[in-house]
Length: 129
Ligand SMILES: [Ca+2]
Ligand SMILES: [Ca+2]
Picture 1: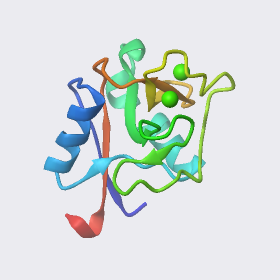
Picture 2: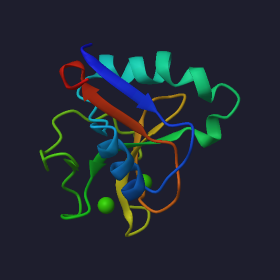
Picture 3: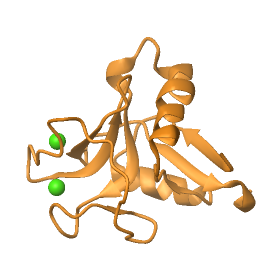
């Protein structure tokens, strides 16, 4: 994969995470295939999630803040064309479940509150390094 990834060791709200990724000249990660999702969950995340899986609910860039139920990527409001929802998600468990997380270690996605602080994943193309 010709991308660079950063999985934060600190936690942040989704908005703060988005800003931090932009400050790295990146974006909150846009996961576009099951292969990429598997790599993140199987290879990248275990380096820091082994003994702390409950803390590894990882923010990525998908959200439905503007239109409930219509999930887009934060970088350009592009509609998602790949999803890896958990079977019970997205469930709009609260009205504020608007930001997508990857659940470690299973790798499924959930719609989740944007304001709890969580680790986050940034991604940028290698050409932007
Ligand atoms: Ca929602
Ligand atoms: Ca949910």
